[in-house]
Each structure stands twice: as C-alpha cells, then as structure tokens.
Length: 161
Image (cartoon, rainbow, N blue to C red; front, top):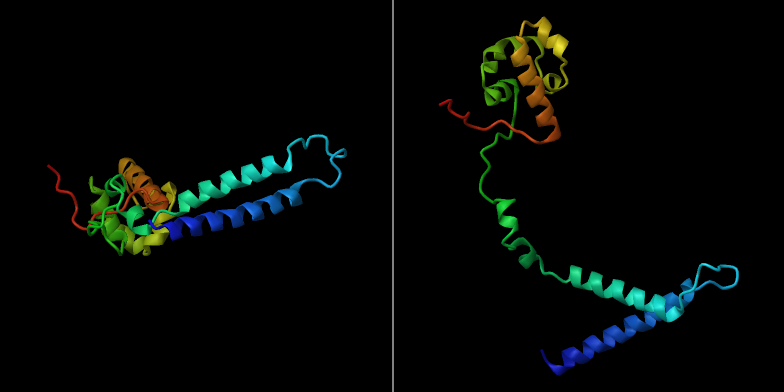
C-alpha cells in the first residue's frame, strides 16, 4: 500500500466524518427541553454513526470471489450436477416415492391427470380411487415435502436392497 492510498483513505474518512457530524446535528431535536428522553450529545450520535458506517463498510468490502470460495460454504452448495429431475410428472413423482406407490401410476394419471392437481389432492379423493391407507399417507407426505421444497424425486430411483 502506498502513502497516497493512505492519504486518500484518510481524506475519504474525513469527508464521512463531516457528513456524519451534519447528520448528527440534523437528528438533534430543536427544543431539547421538550424531549427529556434525548440526553445524548451530537458527538455521541456522530460516534454511533461512524461505528455503523465502519461496520457496514467492512461487511460490504468482501470481494465476491472470496465470498464464493469460502471453505465452509462448499459443504452446503455443490456445483456438481444434481441427481434430481428437472421435469416432474405423476409417474416420476410416484416412482421417486417407491414403497409400492408406483403401482398406482396408471390410476392416478387417468383420474387426476395433472401433477399439480396431485399435489393439492386430499386424502378422501385418493381413498375413493382405491389407494390403501399407508400409500395415501406416503403420497400426501411427499406431496407436502415437494410443495415446501424439502424433497424432489431422483432421476434414477434408489434400488431397494
């Protein structure tokens, strides 16, 4: 860092201090007797504004390359291709659930037709279609998880072992 950079930084900081002092005078009430709860002086307000400014300046000054290359974020966000389907229909949804629910694909496609209608279908409608209780529960449970964004069917179903 050269001395010119340091001088430029002190110039910028002095400009901000002047601005913060003017903000503090604007925030100070005109009649201090009318507002008895206001006991801070203008310099205390200016100091508070300076602290806010320096803290936000530090938080914003992280370069985007360093923010994305943080070692802790790699375990939450991977850049690899996801094993999940992009387009989900009734057969993919039921095959993703597994556990015998995929046997009802033809029945649900003919009666309900649309995947989004399946997501809002209630248990009584599934019962009228002749789907057993445990499988109805699975369909409703995974439909809720899908709507909330907690679950998506995989491209290749998991092999039962």
